[in-house]
Image 1 (cartoon, each protein chain N blue to C red):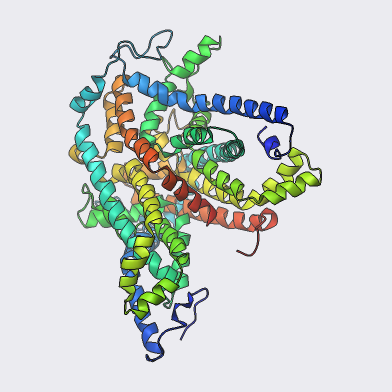
Image 2 (cartoon, each protein chain N blue to C red):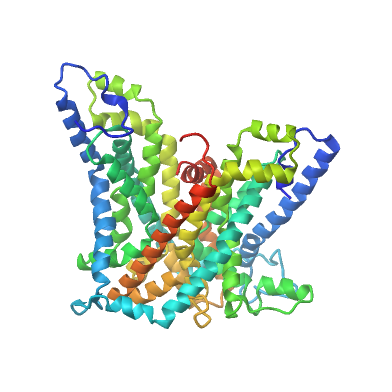
Length: 288
Length: 315
């Protein structure tokens, strides 16, 4: 259906308008399918306990149980989980972006023996299933006595971020004119100064993109926190929510409240930084 | 001096007052300083674990007692482990059902969004946002919707006179239900990549096709698909590789691999072996098999891509 719309520029206006109308109807129909789960989740999160299900289903809760959004913080230490998640996300992202940009800069603009081979290795590691490295990684942190700390969740990313971040930054750094480096060199700047004073400030868009990809990754990450964090006070939101599920399975309204709270920051981030989301996704797809 | 392919021409106009080797040596030292942090992380957390993992795969190791070297016993064991078979079949089933479906839905949505109609940004946001949601939260949401007793899905079925289903709790329906869920949360990324790819197709090609009298199907088949083939190919590779691993969080938080072993995927089996049974050696062997399969698939796809992927220009 959509394919037929490609060649359209010279069709009759009536056909054109009908076509647009049909397209809108289809898109609205699909949109409703995509939105209903969200809507149902939020609706359930605002229902009183025991009234989550009625026949017929109640789309707009009556009465609206706003108190769920307070109760959920009393029933489970969600504030603590949120603080933990924010701490991990911010630290890993901050250090990761810096280290990745430095490495990406070197790969893009400096010459050194072994550069292309190292970079190929970096790109190849993108294909690596993370579960393969997880087992030895776990044993490393176990031997260092760092199980049930945040180190396993922060350190691997702080050291150079992800291979993808290095790749992304290198691609971007290659597009900055080399004349800028030359001018700085004439003025006596060293390579680090060039990175810090020229490349890094010019890379603001790609830094934003990388930061957003990283924030989403760490905020949503489940497997590693599950493996590494054991004491309840250290749980992240993702783990806290999963445990909440196993302990309070019948309280659907509170579970939906907690879920809504967890995805709220991502939705807000999306609306403030939509451009960067889109760019990150597109860069991952088109420049590969 | 070694020359590196594709190196920037930064050195070409260096002041001649320096001996030629000095700046390049200093540059190499600086460069290694720049990548030192990354290189350390990469060596410790990617390269070393890869190598160590193969060693661990040849041991019997429960973490508490010392590792015992058993050569290829773990690999022999996994060849006859019924749960390896079950979990592999489940993984292949879910991948082969979900990856083509994702590509078709993502491409269809992208084609629809590539039209010149109003409110495109609203639609785009609606289709894209689910793909960025925390999987634990959306897993809970879908557990509630597919609840066999009072889920919204069954309310919908009974309201049109159909019998209610047990969805995730029905062994024969649990895998398709998982795939259905991933159609909601898993197509946004591929859709965005397709959309960017579509927007990169030059307008003249469509004009030329329409002058030649090509119908809409012919245009799609002979302009859109060939121009988009690198992107389709990329989404296919990423889709297959990520489908092996990406469903862990969703399945862990919905069915935990059940009912029975109906949704036990391979990665989840590795996880259980490693972090519940603490059979590190066996789990490492299992993970190496996965790694080999991913590697082989990637290679195969690159070979196949030469036949049907059209790359524009020399880039």
